[in-house]
Length: 210
Image (tube, rainbow, N blue to C red; front, side, top):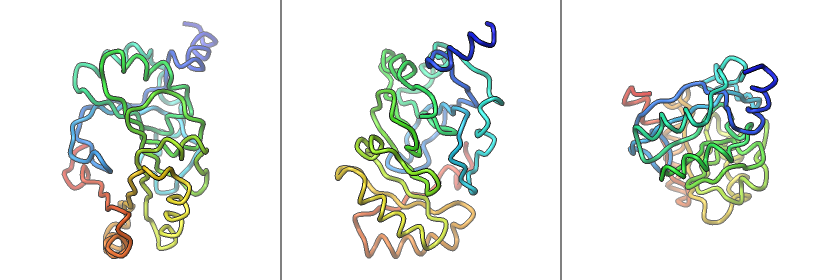
C-alpha cells in the first residue's frame, strides 16, 4: 500500500499502529488473575513521567497492522481481549471492537480517557492522568476507575476523579511500581478509612509475567 493509503486506513481504524500483542494473566484492577489477550496500540501524548511503556508513545515506531490480522491472532488464544497502549483512544476503535465482538470475544479497554470514546466495550477501565484529564464520555461509561498513587497528593486527585465518574464505577487505588514500598502502606490505610476504594496491585510484576 502507498503511504497515503496506509494513513487513510489508520484514520478509519482499518489499520492500527500495533506495538505488541500477547496472551497473559491480567495483573491489575477488577479482573486481576484472569487470562486475557492484550493488544497494545502505539501512540500516546498524555506523557506520564512514570509510564513503564514509554516506547509506546511514538506511533510511528509501530507498524500499521490490518485489524483483520489483529483479530485473527486474538481469537486463537482467549475469550477476553484487553486493548491498551499507549493511549488506544487516540485512534478510532469502532472497527476493531466490532470485529472482535463478531468473534464472540469480550472486549476490554485500559485508557486515560483523554480522547472521545470510540468502539463498543464490555469493560471500560479508566485510569485518569493529571496532565490530560478524561473527557466526560469516559467518566460516564467507566466500569472501573483506577488511580495510580505516586505521591500523597494523588489521594486528593483520586477523590476528585471519583466525584466525576459515574456512581456504578468500581474504585481502585494502585501504587506506582517504583514507589510501591512507600505508597502501598498509605493506600492500605486509606482504603481502610475510605472503604469505597479497593487496592489494586501490579500482580503480574510480582509474578514476573508480561
